[in-house]
Length: 638
Image (tube, rainbow, N blue to C red):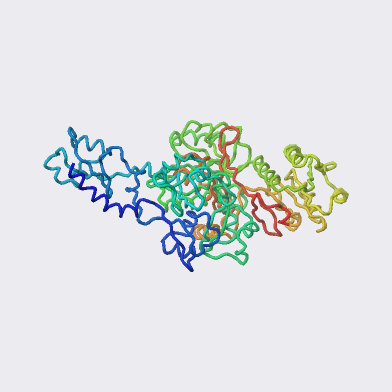
């Protein structure tokens, strides 16, 4: 026992060192003239990380402010909460990352190795005398072991908290919705000596939300634009300026600005990560029509779509390979033929692929889906917005939102921004228009049951300009009038926009649509701008964004052509899909991502399959099309 007592001196000597190491976070008092940027640079951490540790800091710091900072001297081995102490007895002493243990009667090397979860090599290296055998009363050094599982769990579920004046155990426990016992379990020294002002303790990461919790501090990156930030955080430029008045003259690299926290808005953002040695096998089924005697790219729209989509996909695979992902891709020509699609998907090897992208047409997708229903691959249906819910396959993924999803998204936007505007639905004679009319009427009536939803109906399939003029006389002048179109039939669209587009400026109005397809190409953009046309869309390309410019430059360098929207979609879909599959095959739980021109937010559809409901709400702001968020009142956008 006398040998063990000698270690008490070592313990007292070592305690001075341990005091500087036992906390992962310590406090720092701000000196005169210091800023977030200068402190971050001195501590070799990013401003974002520093502000994340100090959420109470708003814009900058002042002299004598107390900040939480990472402790450079921290050693997890002296944090007993993450060290394996399963074999430690009452008489053992822990000093400088070692357990000092006195050998007891009947103990053997084997029992010590088992009880302390240590290897024989570690024992002999730290106790050379054991080569001569183990004796009762010997004091041996046993290296501490970090419980990696416990360490990761603790770091994932806790955060540092700076004790403030008037804080008590009760007030902190109440704030973080825990018991005082659990607070003391997380912080043993609090149980021993109580709370000390400006001390740093550990608390659960799930705190009670406040208004400030809805935002985070973001550092502006090199070449980043204000518009790019508004898209990244789904916020309008006006809202960004409201949060950060100091950026009214523009933003610069390194600026710290307040933005909405994506984690507080629903699903988290998907984080790209390719694990080491990742490998994927995918197939692509597109209608190249390669067996034809000649291919006419000038007149064959489908051939152009397939080729552009494929070229974009190849760029995505090239990019991912450079990041370390091994991709084996097999390409098939479906010839836009159901029988050919059937024969291709009959191949046994496809059952073990990770994903099949294509075919393009729903009828062919169903054939492939039925054949591969019980195999491994996800079946990815690109481009089509038709209803896929009748195809019974939980591994079927529809890349584009359906018209029903678009309608729902647009109506959600309307509900979020309604402020007693007049509501007018413009019907058409078609079956599609009637179905859409029935779909939206109930939702619009529910916005204000006491206010009539007005209906403008055609006569003999046509709305005469005089009818628009008569109807205009019934509208209020000091209110924004919201019009809703229910069809995309060309003649109907011409009637609507050619008439509403020439309404006097005194008549403030907005026209809402539920899709924007090729039929809009004949509508004068000036009319669309005049009525501040709003619509949902699956893919929206900002040609001024850095991400698009980079993509365009690579595409042109490789293919000597300008990329089409289908090339962008081919890149986005392939890049996003393979990034997700590299992590796991669960498309729904992985969060929201945004690529060059496409947002991905996968949900389960009515038949158990998967559909991407990520889309953009776009409005005409003059002749410029602008992506909106779902919060900003529309009146201020006019």
